[in-house]
Length: 391
Image 1 (cartoon, rainbow, N blue to C red):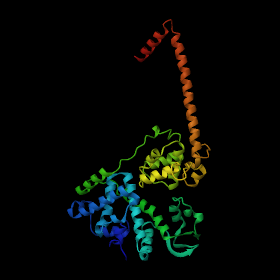
Image 2 (image 1 turned 180 degrees about the vertical axis):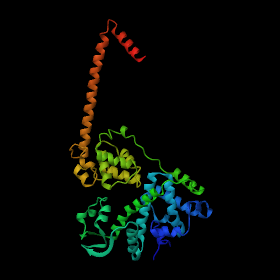
Image 3 (image 1 turned 120 degrees about the horizontal axis):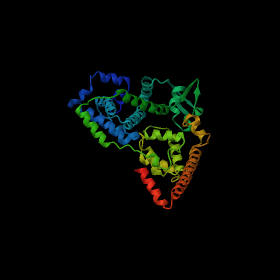
Image 4 (image 1 turned 90 degrees about the vertical axis):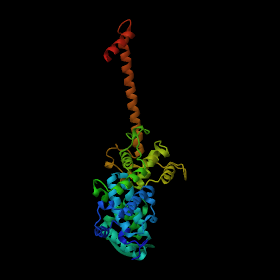
């Protein structure tokens, strides 16, 4: 089989079952990394994590090692190191980078062997119902058919029209997909798989010295988590609809959300008065955060680029269609859009503040009359009464 940089399939895709079996033959444990003979494995594991931090979705194939054993053994070690660090943002960033690297590897495989590898990953790792089904329909060259459930599980996260089921070729409960489309559907599966591997490791005790040193270096290069005092920003989040609060919670936790959710949230914030730099801060904890790209997209949504048209937030019906509505709108009182919910909440807040002010004024007038009516020296008597009450 053709290989990349001379690496075996198990070294290129170290999450395969064969990779685990092959590594088990070496009898390596965590204690093994105290041995200087394994320093290169530790260095490669550290570099895997640092590349994930620095490059994320833009990770390149050039970072791969030429050594089959180093590439194979460094993957589970990097998983253990991330588990030991206990940083969920880092775990998601690493999962994203690993998934992106996998996709680039698959796309770069010799077409003669690509189908075999793609099917092996889809079936052996993710138990997907996929078959080879090469044919041309409407000028499109399909390579596979996918069970409806497996197709929807991945495609529902995509918002481009070509992924909608109504625009697909569906035959007897199977959806035809191209080679590129199937590889793209594998990306999210790989991310989920890597995150599950990290979670499965659980708590780790003392680590070998070289591994601890590597972790210390990684911690020093990790960006600080972005924390927002939401109550101090504009009027949120108590005036935001549940759907927008849910998206904000996921973003601040560093979770991935759909492209449509990204757009909807940025459009909502832009329409209620947030500046681009304030909106961008919400996205800084995402595993695929790229400030340059985020700034361009947010400024485009805000009408500062391109056609200079500010996009409005989607309607409630559109939010429901894209799976972003919370409890089917039961918490929102029948509004038609997130912005309508926000405006209503603002009006209620202003009315509440006005009522409080009026109550306060009435109490103040009554108190003043009581003090003034206490005698000829009303002011002094009133002050004395307050002092007595305090002391």
